Length: 216
Image 1 (cartoon, rainbow, N blue to C red):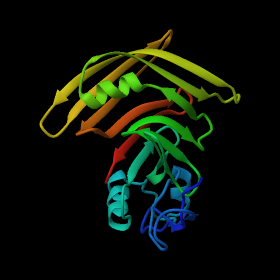
Image 2: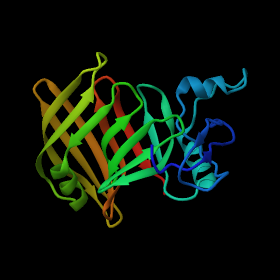
Image 3: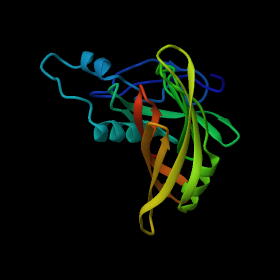
């Protein structure tokens, strides 16, 4: 990817060295990046089989990374780690890791992934994004194009109901309940200001859900 500067991925404990980014970021900057559950376990001592703790990953990231950072969790594949912004194209910002996995977000809303196999190739969801960022309820179309295990692209053209589930001065919790024929799914969002600070969204039927939490 263009715009990535050299960055050394280093973290104590469960998050081990993964490699170097090239492009943006100061030389020598530590970055605990995406690790699969197997990769994490392989780096533990034989006596220690404790799984990676999201709280520890978040604390380590905030202590070692300067600038924006987002934590990601994919339960179906055991992936947990952090990503940083590497490229911006209009309203879309791509957040990436040293092992070439990436997420494309619009103000925290997931619109694409790369590097996971059954990726979300692209999305059309500006109606949904507008309602969520405004904290408004309504109905919108959410189009998702994902890669199947057979390497073909399938389209989900879902009708979604957006609802406010709770609201405080600091944040608004929202849900997006979608259906397309026999397929149904529910995404959830936490909005603060004009940014989605946490989202749990479907990537694809095969990969399942990802949770993205903005740490800084």
